[in-house]
Image (cartoon, rainbow, N blue to C red; front, top):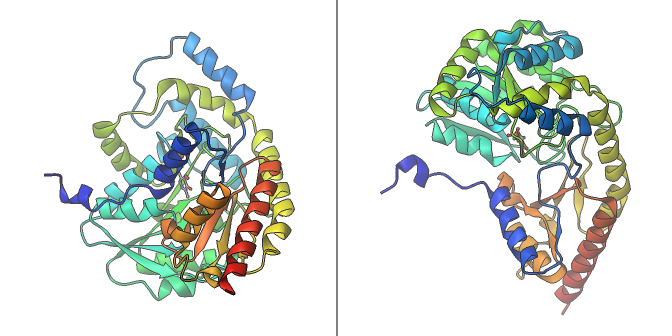
Length: 393
Ligand code: PLP
């Protein structure tokens, strides 16, 4: 008999979908896979070279649990230089990816029955992690264009609200949160004394020349109630290397460090050492962001012109989140059915909205070569045209 907490856990839908597609590809089927939540670029050479050098220097011992000092200093310095925040090394924990940082934070903050506010569509990991620590996820259900406001949040605050999870640029909608709304959300957090967990993993992928608004930089007096979560997975295309961090008040960082010390210990020694090179390479993330924006601008008109499809134009990250509620019918009553039929008929793989608690949509990742993207959009057009035509008979 397994524990209740595991029986209640929904496995990551995007990860399992991805392995299913790899299985089909291994059988020889040419599938255009637009499900992955990771960059298609190779890591920058400086990082690869740094990693090889680190291995050759016999960097193979356990590291301090919170991360090697030089890396925590480099991260704190990034926040000082980029966002004028006065973080020091002991405001920083390094973990094996932002996902682990989030879990460490929730396990350190949430008592059973504490409420954590999350808005949908949402990356499903937040919900599952809240459940794992016996908290209660409280959902704000946003409608297109998925703009979170302080008023949405205020309507969900109760005496049990312990934390709110923000994510911008957002997975899966690609939306930001307006600066005045972030200011008002900070005021609500101060007034009602809840934590703000700000997942800024896509911070370097913001379009149209907009600056990323790091949450505590908007009002540094919130720093004692705020954890910023980020990492190198998306900015430097090293999702598999596993390197993320959290910046917050020392007491919270100490608690998260204690937890990490009794679960996984410090992140990989070689990756931490190599990661130092990323903080000297500010150009690569900018180049990647420009490439994503070009792809968005190339694909957007194609996608938006398919009858019945209503894509949300992303302001950052690398996803189109597309409303297909008008296209659902008896043959494909749900977005999961629709995506399954598309995969079978046109060999294009997308993530159905159900994976983000938003049935009736799909997520298309444009972290893929533009030629593949254009072909995929043609295939989606063909699929929609055919299914709409067959509806008439
Ligand atoms: N936060 C969001 C919103 C994500 O989409 C992802 C990955 O897809 C993560 C965090 C996890 O990042 P990491 O690879 O650093 O664990």
